[in-house]
Amino acid sequence: MPLGVPLTGAGLPLPYIAGIVVFAAGLTIAGLAPSMPVLIAGRTLQGLGAGAVPAVAYVAIGRSLPERLRARMMAVLSTAWVAPGLAGPALSAEVAKFFGWRWVFLGLLPFIALTGPVAIPALVRLRRKPAPQAKASRTG
Image (cartoon, rainbow, N blue to C red):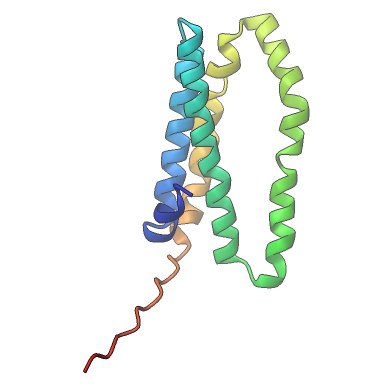
C-alpha cells in the first residue's frame, strides 16, 4: 500500500491534502485534454488522488472512534459511495449535454476547493498513533 508509510509516519493531513491536490490536478488535465492519451493520464491521476481520501478516512476512523463504533462508521462510509455511483453517470451525461464533456471534469474543481479543506482541521487534531517501541536487543 503506497500510502501506508505516509499515513502511519507523517500523520493524516499530508496524505489527505496530497490526495486532494492530485485529484484536482487529474480533473484539470482531463478537462483540458487535447487528446485521448492526455485524458487517460488525467483520469489516472484523478484515480490516484481519489484513492487517498478513503484511505485517510478509514485510518481516521480507526484512530478516533472506540472499537465498538468502528465497524458501523466504516459501513456508513462505504455506503457513501453508492449515491455518487448511481447518480454520477446520469448527472455527468446532463452536464456534458448542456455544457460539454470538459465540464464534467472542470465543473468539479470549485466543489473540491470548497469541500476539500473541510476535513483538514479534524485531521490535524487527531493525534498521531505512537510508533511501536523497538525492543532493545541484549547481546553479551
